[in-house]
Image (cartoon, rainbow, N blue to C red; front, side, top):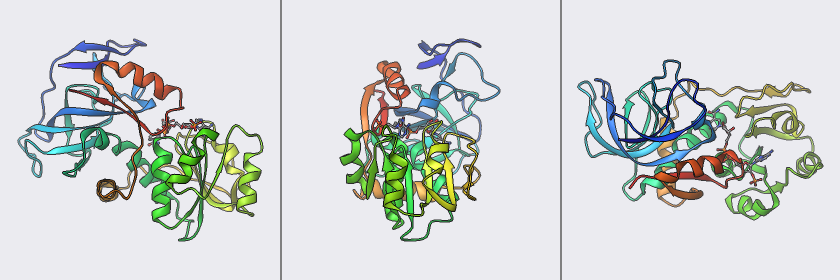
Length: 306
Ligand SMILES: NC(=O)c1ccc[n+]([C@@H]2O[C@H](COP(=O)([O-])OP(=O)(O)OC[C@H]3O[C@@H](n4cnc5c(N)ncnc54)[C@H](OP(=O)(O)O)[C@@H]3O)[C@@H](O)[C@H]2O)c1
């Protein structure tokens, strides 16, 4: 099969290669991949027992082709989207993937195409986990999202509005109308050195909680949080905080499958918008990765496998 792989240990490249189709174990399903969600982490997120050549990637949508001997609940022909990370057999930038049934697997609603489905699992489950940690935001409370126009921010704004939270968000000015269209009540440009005071003008005393998406943004974002409020740095920043602001860690152990399924239904029903930066042909995967690495893509970049 064709796959984008790290060819050998220490290689600092990703390249298209012909590799063997993975063999499934009893608790795995073999998925024929139809679309892949692209994330900046795809180029550096590997299991400890990685085998080379290693297909990269952690999320996709496709059709179940085969099921292992102990698998129940899935059948050949099922359309699924999934997050499959840290798999020694390889990731999702491939024509076929072995997916453990322990993974986050979501049935794709009948009316949803594969490209849309592939854009949901990582961003959706990450926002749901982050919100699970934000216990300090009551209905009618306030959330600030530093990084509102990317894949996480796009879902973050909309899911916060579903919880009846008031939302402020940052992005470049060109994306401000986009943030408002998603439900943001106030927007700031993070290039403006005064943006934290603008958020404070909107919510004197500070917001109940904030989500800092990009690495290196947590320390500045902490300034807009109220005393003893919460801050969740999605990219693992370990910023020192003051005034009792609590720095939360991502609750990876929490099961968000029901919430992710509900998100899929909401998308299919037209209640939540998925922004796709572009659907790239599989062969152009490295162009898609380069775009995501600029950290300036609006919404999600997706690969389509014909
Ligand atoms: N912990 C987890 O489980 C987890 C899961 C998924 C992702 N992540 C991490 O989350 C990050 C990617 O999130 P994403 O997929 O939403 O990103 P993304 O789609 O790549 O985000 C791009 C957006 O970020 C905005 N941006 C860039 N620099 C910014 C800054 N300094 N302040 C505010 N906004 C800024 C850009 O806005 P403009 O173009 O409008 O300027 C752009 O629209 C990565 O670091 C990834 O590793 C973590």
